[in-house]
Length: 400
Ligand SMILES: *Cc1c(COP(=O)(O)O)cnc(C)c1O
Image 1 (tube, rainbow, N blue to C red):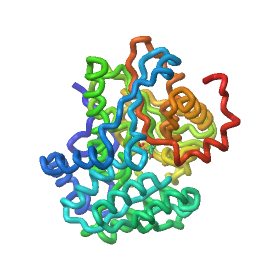
Image 2 (cartoon, rainbow, N blue to C red):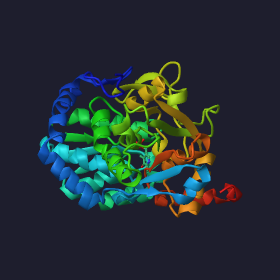
Image 3 (cartoon, protein in one colour):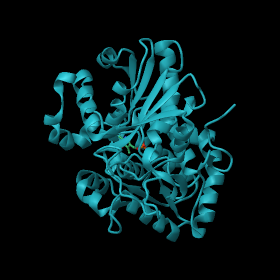
């Protein structure tokens, strides 16, 4: 049977691997040897699930969205990651990696962040575990995302503004890798998505797999069968999508639809749709689809949604896209905005802009009336309110 899972060398088909500088080789190798025995151990599982339940507030509800279902003529369940502590799925991963760091005897944490969501999740985990934390963030993003910068500082993290390149997420990641090279022995690098060198994509996917583990149980209770007909999620680096599909990846009864950020449109160069317009390259330690020029310079991505604004996509989804296992569509800014207002007016839930890209797939897919659809709402929209308000006059309220 074909499997879409990782192989023993750290590849998903043609994608993945660990392309790291010599100086990090033994650190990454050490992590590769230790991550599975630790996260599969009874002790880790107990501590991790205790935190997920009592600190994060899991299981997150699986909510049958009645009015949305009526509109699209099928049964739509929302997996409510927006209700987690800190407002998104990222905390699942940050807590898992910090427990791993502690078990490996690391005493210092670093992270990269774009919009600041992963930075806030990591700073939260570090406050909880009393570990020093430095978050690398592009100087442009530090200005754009001021509230999250203040949250991280209040939590006790040091936010380090990165001045190189375009001063956004890619540059912050480069700087975090540089720091890691200088302090490989005592420092644990908490990566925020299913990107980076092996074992990160697999490790992050496993830590987020609690999402599909819960979906199975919740569907069994609500539908009398433990699988849906469709799974829908948005993809930046790919972690909420990887968690959503983890236990269904080889189950061909379940169709997978992924939304990447189209920005102003695939045909413009103002996009972040790296699965569809990217070419194969190495970025941040992994072979993936990257937005790049002919001579391999990274093209700055664009999306209205900061969390989807990354010039590549993790290896898991590159493989799912290439094999046709997942249907991937680019959702443009205006479509995501319309979908955000639609969910807000139909269900009283203001989604994160990233999640709105997943919601905007609903009108583009063909459902049968008895289809069971599970769509992951990766985060809540509080952080995006000013963007939503800026665009409230562009919304077609008659179409809702
Ligand atoms: C960061 C973020 C994303 C995108 O990251 P993935 O790793 O692709 O999940 C999506 N939604 C929210 C709310 C985020 O904060």
